[in-house]
Image 1 (cartoon, rainbow, N blue to C red):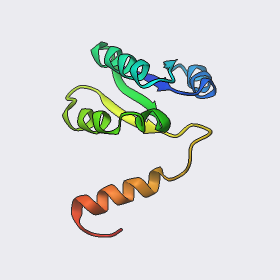
Image 2 (cartoon, one colour):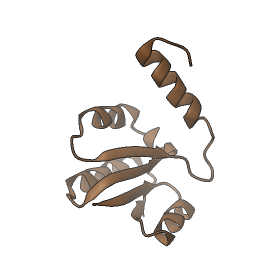
Image 3 (cartoon, rainbow, N blue to C red):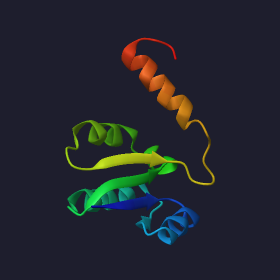
Length: 102
């Protein structure tokens, strides 16, 4: 089982390639969805890393896949141009799910 990166940034793709993670760089929503579909069909891929900017192109699709995908884990990662708001988003999701502010 391996990782696969879908990025909107060449620098992120190069950095991941340096640590042995293959990936693809896309910029349009249709390109992203085709790359995601291809990664989901590849049985050797266990974890799909997706940059925040691409997740924002299709948030409903990503959310649905995260909940229903039985085999692969889809993980949102920030790139060097991203913000550090992911922790805040996770706190918000957990708070909404359990009804308690963290």
